Length: 114
Length: 116
Image (cartoon, rainbow over all chains, first blue to last red):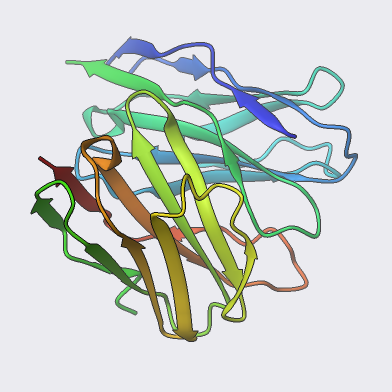
């Protein structure tokens, strides 16, 4: 079974600084999909960014970017110019091809200090 | 689009009572997922449906848990009888299965269940 590991239960960053959240996963598949979701205190889960494994180029969404290392099975999220509204729990998720379900990591709680 | 709608938002009940959680997926989405979130176990997939058919219920913890999707716009997760260890936030999520295959999950706001 696929597993997703987020080794940092908590992280903190100063406002306007950059922070990187780590995620590793285990799979024998060559094609799959990776996601980062954000869960603010409101509890709503929101997609931050996604990456297709067959694409070598790292995904970018405004201040959010990923460092996808397929050989190392690593998928870290970089948040640049951190804002107070970025404070949330962040979940890394893996989805295999031809399957609907996603497997989530345990989450990383990000605190942004003013 | 109203998004995925879950009800109730909060549920407090006594041990032994039946609990029914409800979900309305986004119109046009043909995959529906029930997740449970706890501090100890994180986000766990309980069951998911494709086109109203249960595909994988291996995450359902016990026979006390059951889920149905009678039509494309409604699903229920029932716990009977409920126990204190069932206390958690239960999320429903929906997704459109397309040829792109990278469709994201849309989550509801969750139901905070407390079993006393």
